[in-house]
Length: 533
Image 1 (cartoon, rainbow, N blue to C red):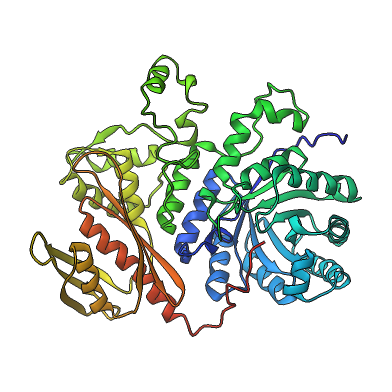
Image 2 (cartoon, one colour):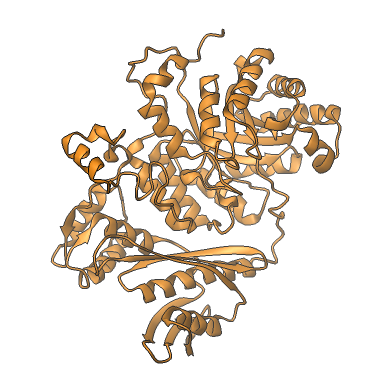
């Protein structure tokens, strides 16, 4: 048996690359930058900021993150092609710590039907492209795509060649979420036992959740010596998603006594197994959910609304006697503060700023002024303002998005008669637009009026409303999705008036669609060709 690797697990966050491949989760550059800065506060070790060759927008987003985000390694993805790799190196060049992540399929099914290349050709390409990457960047990660379905002996050979040519991290992807924990653990153990130079590289894993096993597979890989886990916030990603960062991190923390021996530590060791600041988990989850429009299911582990909720009388009785009876972790350990009612319409700017700082927000004077005006507006409608209300309104107010169309006013009339909406917008050229429409309900009427003004064909495929807090005066969060030419666009807004929130959410999605159509003439790599690892 090999000596356990005592190094902590590196957390490689790919929310901005693989996570963004989830239909409808597309983010603009300011939103990506906001997420990246929060990931840095969370303490992730590596941020995979995007796929620079995929489009001009992706390149610019990775470049901005490399220029402005401090702390984590900034990584870009590139196919095993010189053009991809060079573009990636250019995008990340400003980062003090940077990495090129290049990938190439190794499974026979991919070689035959996707690459149309022989094993010998793939072996040569892997070595050459890793060597080329190393010429441009000292930190190079190589992924043999679809490793979970690759022939192990061929996989060992490719990995050994990649390390010999300069790869510093070897990532093993279960690209289609096919393996089970025992199988994946055996694959990792086999790599450690059969790749002669494996000690020269960090062994990483990237698991997909098609069978619901991504987290289990990742944790089994850690037991077998993997020391980097690639994951996303809330587990978002293409198809069924990726390994959930918060689940892996909290499993390693809560069950530290179990995992410690696999790191050569005493079971009772209190030394963390990752460098994640867990108190930032909840806020990061909310930010990603709000920006992408991907709602977190109430029963989602760690960050779901029901994760720390107890309705059963037996559970409530036990909790009152001792929290450990039915809770294996403290809600505060992930940054979930109690829903304390502390602010109202008489609260001043300093009190508001102080509360924001307690919640982890560091705002510029301009952003604080905007947020405070929104706070006062909400405070006039609600008697008391909760921490959750503050988070919702600040995230909504400060979200930066292309504002081709701006909602000026919306008014509805509904009841047993014909629901009617009047909408006033300001268009891209600054001209005021006004129209009215009748619908099956007030929201339908609003959306029909907006569509007549914007005149961009789209199909509404999802509309959801969630209450931020309890009570008749609760703020409501509205998330919508539109589809146009097989592409999905999301919008999100929070307001005490659901109709107003619905209108703002719809305008937000339409602005993203409008921006995409505006940029359609720019050359871009089809995302279907930019397949995930």
